[in-house]
Image (cartoon, rainbow, N blue to C red; front, side):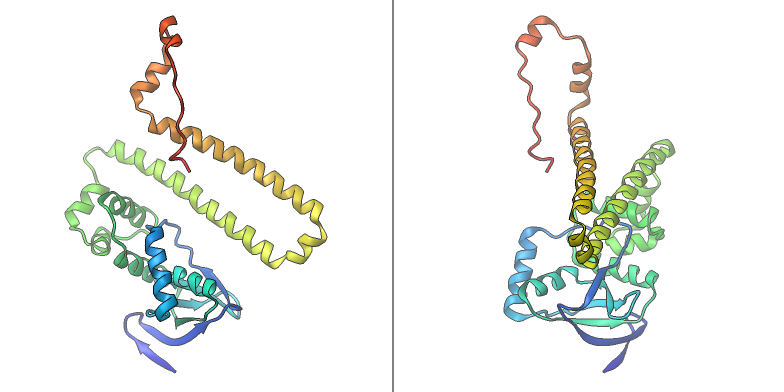
Length: 257
């Protein structure tokens, strides 16, 4: 049965997403605040006991039998873990409107710290190109607060911040795309991979080696950023003999992972 849903300005239809259905997660190009393990455990317990109370939102995918999840990826994942169908609302919207709905839904249900809101404001402004009034509305903040975050008194500092943010945001998006492409390839080409194990293994090992080097580099750079600048300056100075003798410096990587 179809009905008009003013919220999405489109025709909506209630359906069930089954385990055999092909689903993809909408690509926003930004990183939304994640759920804690405790929140996911509570959600799973609720679904296990009562089922999915709020249907997920989906739109038709790029090919027949494929759906794109706009909101509710965790609910669908839990349903698949429990082996049950997931109720969904299929809406007819374009990609731009789908991204808007995804952002609206996620930000309205997430409790964020001031730092998280500030990071999200930068993403909404520089990546999704939302206006300051819309960002203020999404984050439940005043226009003045958002304006100060995005337009500080020192333009040079802002330019540097944009440069750093955009660089790592682009790398983050590329990394997610790579992971998704590997998963899709392995799922769609399993028989070819099995028939060409040597080539597949060689390719995977090569990729693994590059990723391990990347992880080592990131670990090293993260540690540098977490080390106070004074300590870095001290390390660059020529140490005195007694200072070397009493040195017992150890790097702590516990929080890196």
